[in-house]
Amino acid sequence: MPKGYWVSAYRTISDPEKLAAYNKLAPPAVKAGGGRVLARDGRVVAHDAGIAGRTVLIEFDSFEQAVAAHASAAYQEALAALADGVERDFRIIEGLD
View 1 (tube, helix red, strand yellow):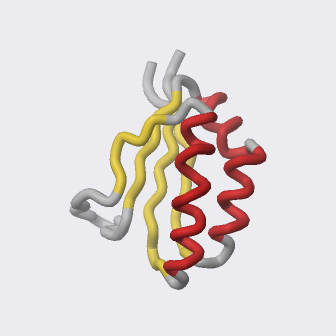
View 2 (cartoon, rainbow, N blue to C red):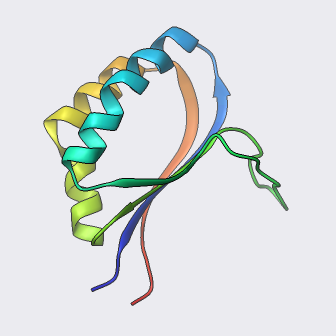
């Protein structure tokens, strides 16, 4: 079964306090949903129209698990705390088998 991934590239961070609140709530929600952080806040080289800012990559055992973790009450609470504090490109993608 193909794995699922969350890929999040931050364009701007307009409210660091909201991001800090999100950063307290999101990790336990991701872990409870079966997610494993593979990359966060490391170096980024962007090409074409890529985003060179903060980038996060999280792996799940399946695409369905990744979708369910995003929909979970715990992660939705984290998103509510983040609100309009950042502008980011967030995607859930299915890996290769």
